[in-house]
Length: 101
Image (cartoon, rainbow, N blue to C red; front, side, top):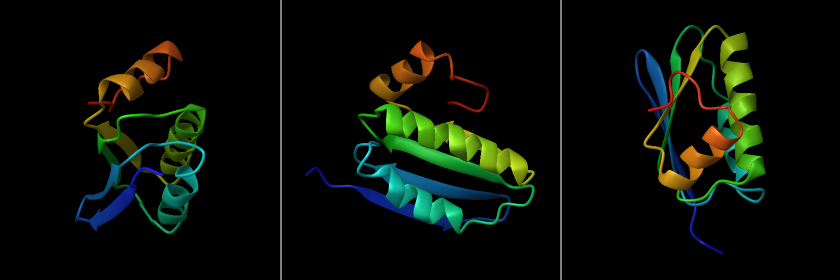
């Protein structure tokens, strides 16, 4: 199994979550456990995906859920560092949106 890591940094106006590894059925629950404990308020949740080379449908479902949850809390979701394959998945499913960098 490839290595996988999640790092959380709680900053003043944002919470940064850096992910390294594949975003798939096996790893998404680990991110969910981290994000379920995050209280955003009106802050930004920035998901740094520079270390994510592969994302499947589970990863896409996770991103949609994160988007809904951050909006419900009054925050915003920002994706950064998208590599080619995850970016292509977002484009093909028409889920690429503002905040994706």
